[in-house]
Length: 121
Length: 108
Picture 1 (tube, each protein chain N blue to C red):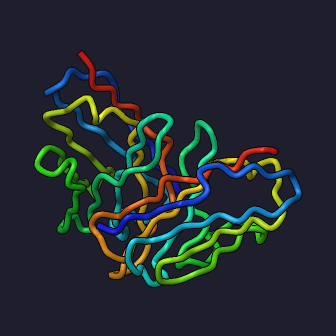
Picture 2 (picture 1 turned 90 degrees about the vertical axis):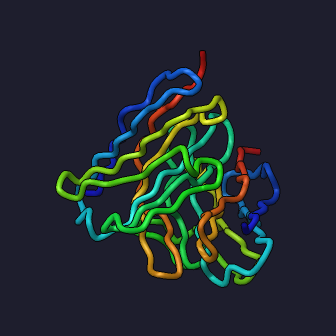
């Protein structure tokens, strides 16, 4: 059974940093790209970042480029999102998701339960 | 960036009735279109990918159709557990992957 468990969310001041983790199990982690998607409570879904199975390729939404960094540790089956220079508009529930597909693109077939990040003074 | 537009924003349907949700893309995405279901307090769940292929474990009452810029998700006979918000997502031209704004299916 595929399981994705996020951790690391919480309250942080504007300009601060936070690191989210996503522990994966139930599949061969290194074989799959992974992604982060966020959702402001009561609003829609916004894709944030993605990383290839090897970690060699990373992708970012313009809204977080230069401030967020995605990485993975395939030996520990864990995905990370380092978030720096946080802004109030980054407040959201952050989901990690497993990506499935090919070079044409990825759908997201399994999702974690989400981790709430609140940026406020 | 491809903009995804969903309609209607809210759909009121009685249990047992058919629901038809629409998703439009600002440019062609071929068949690289997925649908997700999100219930209150839960993570999204993949329903459909490739515009029309049901994901693992998804009941047959869910079907997807369309290609290019116009797509439809149909729920043939709504069950109580189907009342939720539904999102479409394109994965043709990325980054970024983009989602529609969602359609809330509520009980009439």
